[in-house]
Image 1 (cartoon, rainbow, N blue to C red):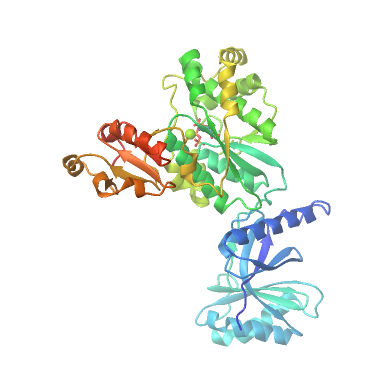
Image 2 (image 1 turned 180 degrees about the vertical axis):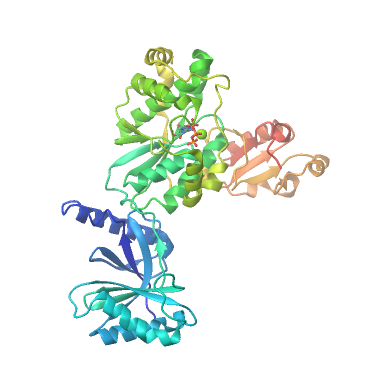
Length: 481
Ligand code: ATP
Ligand code: MG
């Protein structure tokens, strides 16, 4: 007989403690999110129900590690289920399944029980212990090699075969929605994760500041979060092209205040979008004092000047950089985040650390409203789970400042040039028929200076190809290995 995987999910401690009014809603949302997680992992939920404070889950594929990434889950373990009549029968069943595990090892039996029985948890543990002892290296309650975990619920018993720790928190969707100002660096993704852990449905707001490469990798980070941690809804990635506004800031605002004004402009745009779409809050990866623009005085001045209609939450408020990095690793984001290069350095000299509200208001007042309005009327919303990273590269641009991972790279240089400075994975232009390539594939053309490739990319665009020219060619591109 083939048995389907069964799991017992222990919910995070605070959920069972909620009031009678709140608790059923939390469980309902958690169950929906677990279902979504199972389905996204390619499985199907055969059965899911609450038994006492736990959730029993039966699926058609192995989903333990997926369920261990659902917020609100404290622990998930694969279990065997058994319906028993008396203590003897129960102890025999457990022993039968545990004999090989305790062989040559010290062990302990831990039992949790609810329902009315003629025996206590300790009786069960003792009974199992005495049957298993001869097969083992002895009982050791303090520091056993293996632990046998058993849950007794009424006439049913569940024997854990293994278990994985979940993230805790509360289920996404019980706490409204927020827009995360998302750079994709180390901080804002961790801030996003922490907000989601507190039940908030988060979407991502990313500003394209100049480098398409940073935005491309920021998208990858958001997609990773959405695919691996954000269950129960379809997270969105909102892309705002801030380049014209940055130009406007560099034209009108004095050096000292540029970083502060940039931040104020980001808050302004984010608040407007939050109003329009209806988010409850804005979330940033700021932590007090981490950068010179993130002092309490600056943040206050910016918030007052911007008059945001949304609360701005900063989940990293009390975190050191090291703590943020170690969380980033635990979430699985570290490598992806490290690819997001520092995008914007429009104020390399001394920056203001104590701007006044008046100053910020004055400088903000210099920004041309039509530029702000244009930025606000052109933002794009992507369904993260359905979008590929290449799709967020602005389609009307022919030049690109990096090579997307999924691109087909075509080398237009002469054989001599190719041999003297090879480009990894590039195909010489003479060896393929470009017109036969798929029009869905991103093509990056590379020549010596970026001009021949520009003209060819433009011509290919007219024929419907997704062709780009590497900006500056081989000479201008420092990052070619
Ligand atoms: P991060 O590691 O999140 O990039 P940081 O330490 O580099 O943060 P800043 O670059 O000053 O600090 O950014 C502070 C916060 O401003 C970020 O955490 C993020 O919330 C927001 N932010 C910065 N750049 C962008 C961007 N390109 N798009 C959206 N939000 C941004
Ligand atoms: Mg940053």
